[in-house]
Amino acid sequence: MKILFTVGGSQAAVFGVAPLAAAARNAGHEVLLAADEPLMAAAQSVGLPAVCITAERMRYGQDGMTAAARIDALLDLTGQWSPDLVVGGLSHVPRVLAARLKVPYVRHIWHIAPMARRDRTAVAELQPQLERLGLTELPDPDLFIDLCPPSLRPPGAPAARSMRWVPRVTQRRVEPWMYTRPEGRRRALITAGTRNLVLDTPGSSLRRLVEELTGAGVEVLIAALPEAAERYGAQLGDVRIGWIPLDVVAPTCDLAVHHGGATTAMTLINAGVPQLIVPDNGYGKAVAEAVSGFGAAILADPHRPPAGQEPGETVVAGCREILGDPRYAERTRALARESAALPTPDEVLRDIEALVAR
Image 1 (cartoon, rainbow, N blue to C red):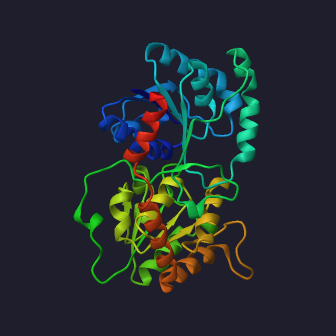
Image 2 (image 1 turned 120 degrees about the horizontal axis):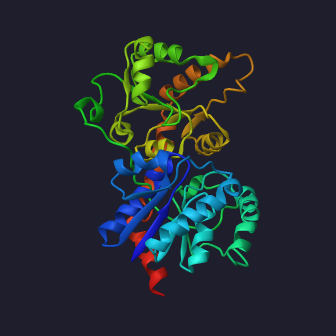
Image 3 (image 1 turned 45 degrees about the vertical axis):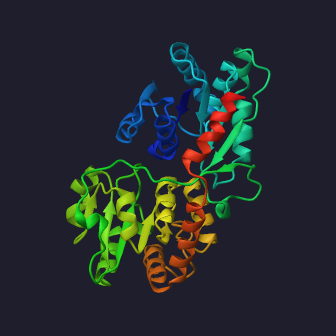
């Protein structure tokens, strides 16, 4: 079987789809990943055969603006390499492609934020492309795979085949301090993912946060792009800063402070690490609301600090609370157990194989 995986947006989309794509390759299927140029390095870093379809990064919520070019690029690709099945994510462009090719379509996402309204808008925006291709309607996905633990799914989320989250990130040479806990100290991880150099904490208080944590005897790691270490390393005192494989270091941490990215949040949940989330956009806020609503995190809204509290104090106070209250770690471990009990990519692959066989 030939499976075309399609991704756009951030590196998180590549990391999210990599376990299922790897399972398909390990089962003997042919796999190609269609992605944007900015995502090529991420695809290569996790061992996926990737084809560039556009030079610029796709922006979610802009299907109507870029659909024609993306569909044409995908049609050119599939004219040379004809898939038996298409796997897509948040964008509905791959769904158009599958309808045009008359092959099954699988939607594969992390459904933690309400998407019904945005989905309806995106489908309406794609109507001109359907007419251009001679399609009368956009059929529903043949299979909907959701990586989100059921306890975090939003109300009204569509029925889905749950799948276990398997961490995938770009690796580097692993050193002993990454996979061992510091003796006699707790450890906190701070990261802004791959979109920003460092976390933009309320009141631009990253240095203060580091000082508060280290002053309390906590070891601080900052997982960031290499250029962040060059620019900020000397300013942040006694910390390790640079590209740190999140899946390796997460099990050694007692706390994580981050921006609300999907890969970051689920990799930390997978390791049972309580989180303080400083969302950098609406999606990050939805992640923070879901995880904090379960009791496994604290949401630090940079625009709405608690009454009488300075913005810079919000994150610091939240870290103190998480480190001082074992219930946050207990709730996160409960989520980790729920996620670990979900079907593996190998198991879900059997459902995909059945779509093509029928």
